[in-house]
Image (cartoon, rainbow, N blue to C red):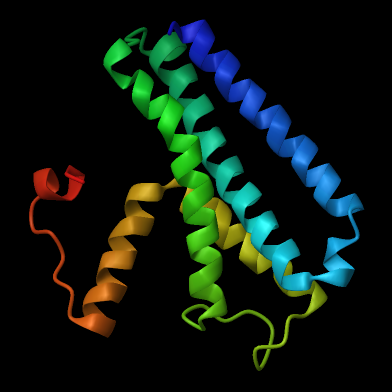
Length: 155
């Protein structure tokens, strides 16, 4: 896949994400099933964060630094998908009460922006989000963090 192919792929995902957001907004789901509406919005917000990161990386690598490296192609393909997943994961952590928006577990109209902001950030910076998950996992369940950067990169 070429740089143009990667850029095209990212732009297609962006268009699909924006179209999905418009469909979601007009679907009436926010009235009939608020939790499902917010989850899907969080997935799209995470995807948006990942796409911003990837498109910025294409610009920096290809235009500014002029150091396009084909070894990074899988990252450009996988990263938006991983970002959408982290958006959904952030939603779960917010709903579990690890982040609080609104009041008393009650979803208020304005609080969706807090969800979307956290999910966008999680999608934009997946590595830091996963590091925070490791901290939470260790605190709640005693699961030890991987100690070296090389170990953290291994599946």
